[in-house]
Structure formats: C-alpha cells, structure tokens
Length: 135
Image 1 (tube, rainbow, N blue to C red):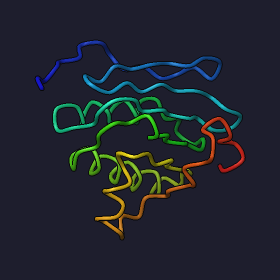
Image 2 (cartoon, one colour):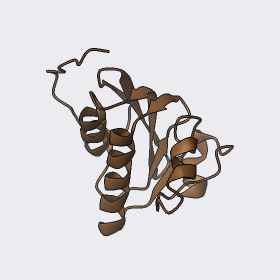
Image 3 (cartoon, rainbow, N blue to C red):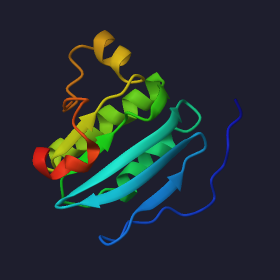
Image 4 (tube, helix red, strand yellow):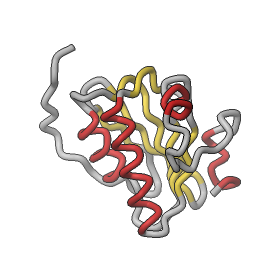
C-alpha cells in the first residue's frame, strides 16, 4: 500500500445535500437525516490515512447536531484508525454532542480486544437512515 496525498480542501456539508470525501483508501459520505448527520465510512482506515479520516469526520460533523458514524461498509480499521475513533468520541463527549457508532466487521474485533473502549456503540442492525430515532 502506498500513501496518497490529498490536496483538495475539506468542506462542511450543507444541510440540504450530501458530501463525499476521498481519504486515500477510505471514502466518507455525509447525509443529513432529520436532526442528525450520518457519516458513512467505506474502505480501509490504516496508518496512512487515519489522520485524513479523522479530519474529514470532524469537518463533516456539525458543531451541535447528533452524529451517527456508520462503519458497516469499512473493510479494515487499524490501531491508528481506532485511536482516531476514540479521540473523536472523546471530543464529542466533552462538547456534549451525541455520537452513535454503528460497528461493522472491521470494528468488532477491536471492540472485543479493547472491551473498555468507551465508544457509544449502537445495534448494528439499526439502519443508518434511522438516525433520528437513536439520536
């Protein structure tokens, strides 16, 4: 795997549309659903792109609306990606922003290994589009 430099600036998602950010091996799409913003991560989060993924998640997250981070389409999450998720969850907790993490097959092994992770994980069977009901 090679590292990719992404030169395009990140931008916030207007409430009326969705956005997609390419993070060199991962893509993040943002969807506004009622009062919540659903961020769907596709691909791999590894040491080469975990910083980009973390920056994109922060940029796409509104300052006070609930956030659903849907990781069901993520194929791989390395320790650096997991660390980014934990840091983002801590930031949301400190700023009183509701965060809900929908795990997928890539996150489940890390959740088992690090049982006291503190991520606000919701049922994986909950559709991402139903974010308003869990927010």
